[in-house]
Length: 354
Picture 1 (cartoon, helix red, strand yellow):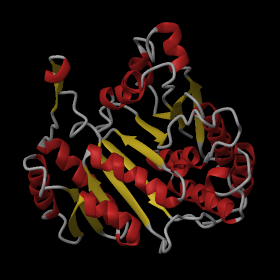
Picture 2 (cartoon, rainbow, N blue to C red):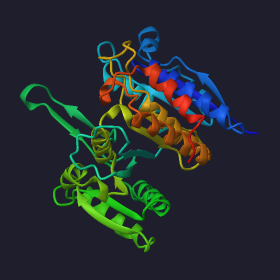
Picture 3 (tube, rainbow, N blue to C red):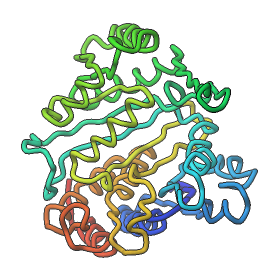
Picture 4 (cartoon, rainbow, N blue to C red):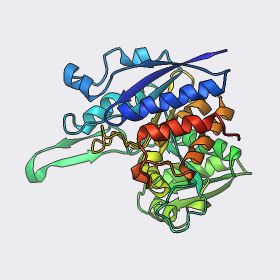
């Protein structure tokens, strides 16, 4: 029996609450599935660490994490003490970039028992495949001058290699789902990078003739997420577009506290990293009401990545049975605590069938 070594970084804010909750659920998963063994190693890297050491992780942090099968992250950020660009680029984005986690996957689906803000949710179920290494989030650019002459330049960088591998990942994923890929573009307004994006999408599409495709401008696509999300299966998006769309995906589910994410390394040289979308939520930290579903769904994605698909599906089914029963945290219309929802998932997991 293989033991998967998991590096755990609870991080900041509610990460300190939802990560232990998810680890409790993963322990229940191991109890149910006797053939699965996960070994967790915790690392106290966060804004507290920065306040003490002047850095978000030790100098050999990346080297330390490289020996693990996966990184399980909670949340990063405490803007009252550490600027967000310092905390994020010192930990989260540093790991993404140095571990070549070039793909970010974020699913969204209607959960039974949740009150979506959409009048007609039509049981939407889609996944956004976000290019995760370049695009609008490049570090190329700078600022010059002061006062009224001050100037800032931010360059978006789109390589054929980076764009194509994200699109191919989307097409491969669509082959396992409902067979449709939507390209998020804006070639009518962004005159260089987005026509290039369209060209690459057309080239990649030719290799998957069985997959249906569409290309929709990002402004219309955002509107369709609200008016008809059920039409989408897999969406291929650039770094910025994917980031924005997936927050909207969380919103139409009923709370960004539900939304999970996976940062995928494709070449096998480094571990992939799994994190919820919600962030550190300092406004509710310590109140015991943080929604654990995003972190638990993130754990499900980690199990899928490790090849444990059957138990991963069982875990997602258990989560949905819990929400359908009415056991929910306040952000999704309930009164349950983090612990109560976590305990309910663990109990249900032992009885659920897929």
